[in-house]
Image (cartoon, rainbow, N blue to C red; front, side):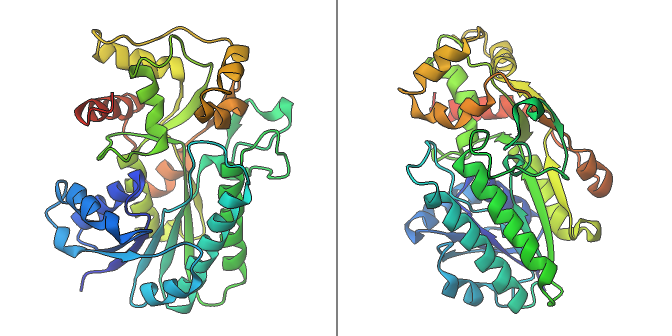
Length: 340
């Protein structure tokens, strides 16, 4: 009998890549989406990348709809909870993000506990680790033992607070739950790698912004980077490996400045006009009033928040693709899709 995985957010950048890897490993996958009108389009995308498309089914589900999860989770072996609201601009009301993220996570974990699921793997974020710090603690290297302080709103965003509160709620539930359900959490950095369709993940903007001619120079920003295919690998290791139960794992292949990303792209596409100069911080802050997608990253201006993946490598023998591969595969895919 094929083992069955319920995967939330099948249409997303990470969700679709993880679905492909699960199908290739012989799992049956039930992928959830908010609107069944998207099902045929995402099936076509996934079908190009696996021979096992017949093992994929879809189900419409909203994170906050408590009633749907018991029905979907019956006779499921594992849950990969990847879906989470991720806006490209700061929301007017932070609870528009926080409430569905937290409620959705709890709905899924509780339904898994009631229905005899072996393990739930939650995709959190390094955003639940490295933010909410006082000024003197913002630069440095953080580990799985660190948490974002959601009370510090100057050094966190609604999205990072939503990821933190949702993950903490899951751990609190598991601590008291007598069912034997296991929980494992993966916290990725900024996810790059090959974009599969024009409805792409927000992180791909790190590469697109270097190639689309929208900026003469780049902000002084840096991020932990990871390839989407490597995150999918780690999610599956966290689902399968006994040693992953009760643990959280950071997923990163290393830290890169925006400028370094641009230099990698420029080396591969010397004919393209790619900026490599730096914008002063005050100019970025001013410009963010025009380009609202910059608002969520202002707290990272001139700050180096780094993490490491030694735990995932040591415990789960995870081997991520290089950052160079993550950047270049992303660049080639956005060219192929005519996004730049």
